[in-house]
Length: 444
Image: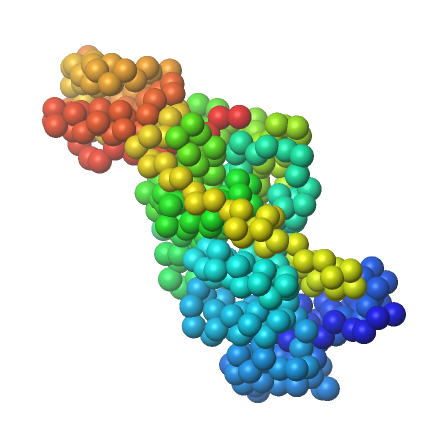
């Protein structure tokens, strides 16, 4: 057997500790699969005295992860610190500059600095691997980078944040509010004390930016992602979606269009018959639409120590197996010089179906006024539903209460710009009692 692969693990949180345990537990199997011993020789974390349930005897401890990255006793640095700047970025840069392979689970770092880090890895002739940065234990990076070279990808989309999927699943099943479900998610450890990064879609946006680069050969462009979160979704929207044959999910969608690559994160109605609609709770799913395989959907755990560690260890095994042959895969599937700038497509140009919930004054002519404004913008209505007040029959024998009521529209394909313009005109006409709810529809 050739010489071993020596690992330096920077960050010993839930994932880092799971990686160390998995390397020890699977030592024989990893050696047999890769042709070399894989062992942890160094670790770094902020708290040396914390009990992690690990046997770290014989493993060198570094208080400074950058010093670990430069150590001559390490061949591959496993960065599990997190964050797009600070120690994580400095550690990865130091490792690459020192000619060391890097495995990371850090989606924020790659979303903001992926192009520069890929170039540095290529110049050093080392691997920069990141399977765990997107969708936890689901091997979607490997699928896009290595499994589909004969395919032209037209769209990649998915449920990339377990916190949001858990909240929406509970809201749908139990009729609870967003606030109540978020509180439960925090109590269960699915959501942070400050949940903004998750529930407002930024975590999903980082992951989507990485998938976009892999799918379409573009430079990672996190700033080009249009982002909306789930905090405005109400139980009524989920009930209406169910009645109309849909389910609401927070999706990240990257799609090739004639104008360029759309990158968008937002609450989305998906047909209940679709594979992605069946994914509930904290589970993640990614669907790839490609010309040869058609629709490919990968479903699995998107977070958690063991699931994420599984993806990290898979990357480590690839590094170990490729060392003997001197093979290094390009970070994003092709040489960094071949990655082209992503041509951004503004959301105003997006074209698709829409769910629109208007809270209107319950009086004659309102529905007709709404329809007129939609027609002026060449927006065709597929269906329209109006809910009367429960007290309407008592208050008015004609069925009108005078109270605000929901008016729900499902449109055929229309541009976002036209939809927004029509809604502005409807508001200017004084027909709305509150701001409209707009949810895009992603059909199969």
